[in-house]
Image 1 (cartoon, rainbow, N blue to C red):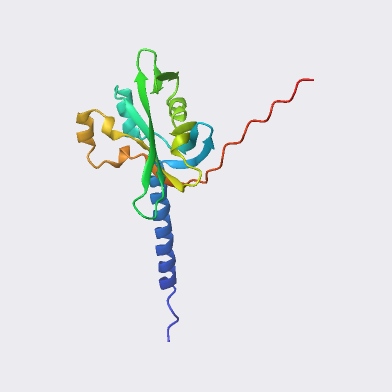
Image 2: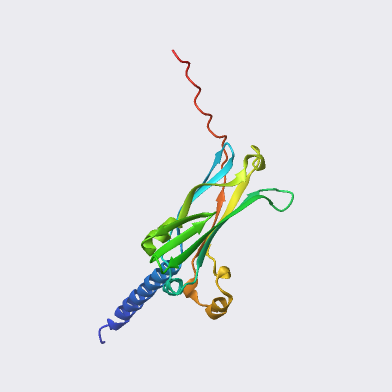
Length: 204
């Protein structure tokens, strides 16, 4: 009787190795095309609910090329605050959004980021992208909209908004994955009363 062939286990091992390699390639591609949400939290303040978030991503090559040709690139963050209800669909109690507009200024050879009436200029694309990757202390709901005995959660999204691109460019995109930059997350809120300021000490 001839000895068992070793080609079968070797072949199986090679197939598994190939599969792992393919998965690693797919994971790397997905990370390069998407947004990693590094931080998302919400805390109660005296004037309402404040959200902070931080993301990590790189601008796709296609978007960078369009930017250098004079196309403005928009990023949008949106938050919806909802109250859970057992007797009916959940109620939306607040909604907020923030838009960043990224442009290239050929005369000054700088990148410009505009949001909420504020404008900043940067010498490099990396610095400009870093300025719009997140925000801290963003008020998304007023104090009167959040009740102490309610159960709340928020739905968060952040994306490169292709809907604000020029119409001819939108048509040209089709199903291209090169412009896909987005992340969505749901966060259950544990609301606590804001800390009271320390009492003033009497003067000696």
